[in-house]
Length: 364
Image (cartoon, rainbow, N blue to C red; front, side):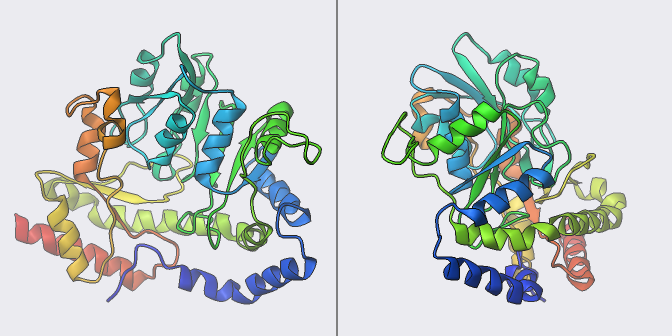
């Protein structure tokens, strides 16, 4: 039996006719960059996320870049962020000439707010937590610092209170996300109208009106085609997230009694967790063996993430060393994402559970 980590073919099948009509609508309009389609998507996304404004941009990475630029972050500035995330989180900081300052994570994989706040200095201009795997970070706690907080919510769209306590929250619509486009796309959420205006300026080369450039921005504009496709999928997001939670509960119920004996740590639940990933933890150096075992049984898994950010070669100039951030480092050695997406059927989930039990029975 094949159990993919993601099954977009199955997701798109019942929506295909509507997606085709949306694409045709954009083609017929002749408007492919910004315009009414994007404006409609932005309004609908803002409503779903309970934000005053959603500014569509070209990717989740560019959402981070634009948000940092909106705060005028640049050379000499520091941004405190997590050591456990996709590279874009820290990469956007470094691209602007600022210094990413890495904090450790807790057992839930999210940034440790105590460690993050200890790393704040007079040069810190923002804190950039990641709501990893669909569970919100403690954004409100970080906001108590008085510094602007940018919530990297690339994996958390649909989570309640998204962006609460933050100056901005960034979204990614990379195809694998809970709400995925047919390519790259992203957005920035904010309740501040001045910030929203600045983001709109920055995404269009700092130009308003056309050919009058007030700042040096970028080409961060979202395609109308992606906006149209996302408008088709957005009404299904809540139901998809409910199914993700049901799949998570099926795993947890089936494995709860055996997990401790297996040396298997199940991911922690939390109110509003939308389960972008279901990452188990396997100690004693057995994670990679488990990955191989599941692969042999047709089950796709993924390691998020194999290297902590403070040990990435491109950040060697920051002086990070093994042992500096033990929480993040152990997560990269132990975490393994198993399929939890809403297109799974009961037989596939049961196959994953049986395969996990088989592995640990042999190991004991």
